[in-house]
Length: 332
Image 1 (cartoon, rainbow, N blue to C red):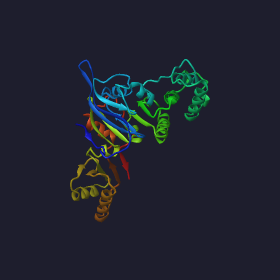
Image 2: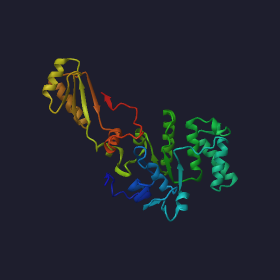
Image 3: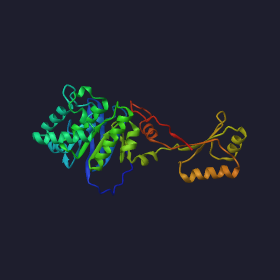
């Protein structure tokens, strides 16, 4: 059973639900009985190593493939018995862009409007609104092959919104984008959610899930290892500590002798004190140092982040998952 941190009393309307989803290919079990409950108007992030089953889950929920067993509803429609109802309610932006580089951005958008059976005038109006919203007006008449990676991704998502879906599946939407383009995409996702759209996000970037998701599930070997908010998941992992570094050997020795449950690094003249990083604990440490007349040259705080959660729950196998390029310790 996965570690569940879900509040069972949540009465929010459910956009996506699944019970016991299973999928195998030959002798390889890709999904091994996963359960999901995603409230409407929220961002749900599914994390896991490559090959963990993230894309398979998206394909089942978006009716691209069928599950071997289990049940799922999306937008109030059963994926097995009412696939057309599901498709009418969702939009899907896959790992690989659906943009046709041989035609212009506008032609890509109008083609999508035709697929949604919009009238010519409605199609042009919708395209114009989306080009404005995604800051692509100046590029609309240009071949999509001339777009940057970030522009193509924005166009891809804009095309997904032509049918005004209330549930959107984003399968690794920012993979390969530069930091500025990633942050632009994050802003777009936040705007969608503020309008009541539900976003089901799979990502290889742990900081992306931390930044965007209301709830996060970690998928490993076809099973959900844990689910909860980012803060709830971080509390599952021990290892928080405060690190004190000294330049004066005498001050270091005095602190090391007086403090209990401390790990010493005599070469670096540093001490590591177990801590949850709370303000109360930090104040207690600083008050103790002041009372003892000991001055540390540097104090850093380490609290578990989604890197630690991911490695703890998946056995340390990255499988290609990207961790944020940010320091875990904050110098105070």
